[in-house]
Image 1 (cartoon, helix red, strand yellow):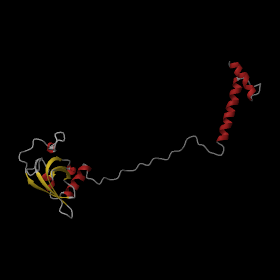
Image 2 (cartoon, rainbow, N blue to C red):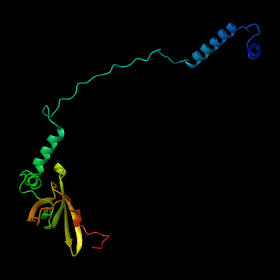
Image 3 (tube, rainbow, N blue to C red):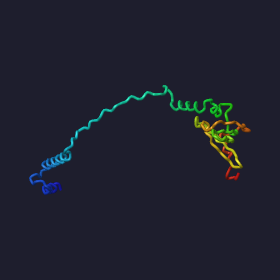
Image 4 (tube, rainbow, N blue to C red):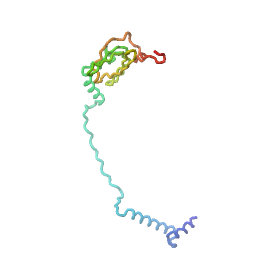
Amino acid sequence: MGSSFLMRLPARGFSAAETSLTALRNQMTNTLSDSRHVQNAGYQLSSKPKKAPIKIRQPAPSLLPKGSEPKQLLEQKLTSELDPTGWRRQLFQRSSPLALRPGDVVRVHFNSETSHTFVGTIMAIRRRGLDTSVRLRSEVAQLGVEMSVKVYSTSVKTFEFVSRAVKKARRAKLYYLRPDEKKGK
C-alpha cells in the first residue's frame, strides 16, 4: 500500500525523479513555509507578545476604627437615629420589666395627617434588631383583622399599652387566636 501511494504522488504535481520520501518531505516543508509567508505578508508577528507590567495599588485607608464591625456600627448609628430615647428597644427587650408580651393589648399611633390608630392583641413578636416587628390581631365588625407593624418604622409614632394579658401565655406565637376554618368558627 505504501508503494502505490508513492507512485500516485508524482501524478499530482511532483516530478517522477523525486519519489523518494526525503525529497517529498523537503518539498512539502517548502510549500508549507511558502504558504505561511504568503499569509503573514504585510504583518509583523512577534514570537512573544509583550505584556504590560501590572500596577499594584495600595488599598484605601479604612474610615472605620480598627477592630470594629461595619454592620454593628451601622446598626448602632441607625438605632440612635430611629430611637434616640430608647423607649422602643425597652418595650420589646425580653429582660425589661416593661416589655410587651404576646397576649397584651396595645394601641399603635401612626404618623399621619389623620389620627390613624390600631388597637389589637399581640399575636407574635419577631425580634431582629432594627427589623423587629409585631403582629397584632383585632376584630372589627365580627371580622378578624391582622396587622404587622415594624417597631422602628418612621411611620410609627407610639405604642400605647392598653392592658396586660389575663394570664401569661405559654406560647410565643398565639396563632391559635385565629379562627379554625375547618370547624367553621
